[in-house]
Amino acid sequence: MKARRFVDSVVVAAQAGNGGNGCVSFRREKYEPRGGPDGGDGGRGGDVVLRADADTDSLVALYYSPSQSAAHGGHGRGKRQHGRNGGDLILRVPCGTEARDNRTGRVIGEVVEHGAQLVVARGGKGGLGNCHWKTSSHRAPREHTDGERGAGVVLRLDLKLVADIGLVGFPNAGKSSLLSRISDAHPKIAAYPFTTLHPVIGTVVFDDYSRVTVADIPGLVENAHEGAGLGDRFLRHVERAACLIYVLDMAGVDGRSPAADYRNLRAELAAYRADLVNRPGLLVANKMDLPEAADNLAAFQRRFRARILPLSAATGDGIGELKSAIRALTSSDSAGTPGLPCARGPGARA
Image (cartoon, rainbow, N blue to C red):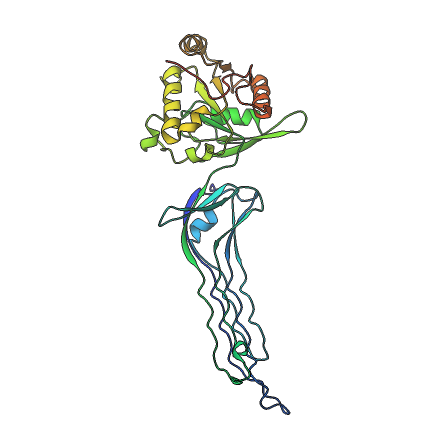
């Protein structure tokens, strides 16, 4: 089966509906041939509305239908009949979608929680019928107004995942394996870099049935903020995360230094958005089941003051301790709670 495409950024042309025209009409019945003006008003045009939907996880539908239009209002009719109002066009988007004016870059708004709505283009008002111009000295008016045009805008929609915790790390650090161990997610796992090509969200369920959502972000590389590797296009998915988990390949399977990975990872996060490195977090040493990992961990701890949680996503060792640390981190009322590995962003020194 072909994998469904994941789209987290799209440009959409949204056009609200036009208002209906007012009517020029005169009442003429058998016993009332000069009944006076009775032209009705036009209906309003439909709005274009973004609605956050928890069952939608991608902008792929709008990617394949980039032009969206709401219904026009109906024209007024005789006997003071009001034209029908145009139906609003509801665009269902994932929770966490931000809307910008594609031309100016101005942020129009965002929809974060399920059911939240944002009007991005207002429909035009309906025109007035000739009955509004009737006076004692102007008994047969023919004036009316046409409906207003609906607003049109070219939107850039960007999805920023809504998760409590973001997993960040270099390719092949074991983030996907770790997510599959602590949550119900089933990301693609393979022994080569960049197996994760789009963000994946998993839910960690604790013994008391409380839940924490964790987002696995595709691996970063050095100079990702300049477009290297997959670039920094996925980093916006950790912007809403209150906490971060830094995952390091402590065995250095790909010939990289865990200390250099840690330093470069923090540098890439800071280059994208300075406040990311100051968020509460955990520092995880993965692949501790491999023989090189113990020596590398000892060297890492000598170099950095940051507390680190050793574990192995492959064998499951340390997963229970990690879940306990996640529970303590996310339930803390204040940042920097004592006893948490690397709270308030791993504070490191070279």
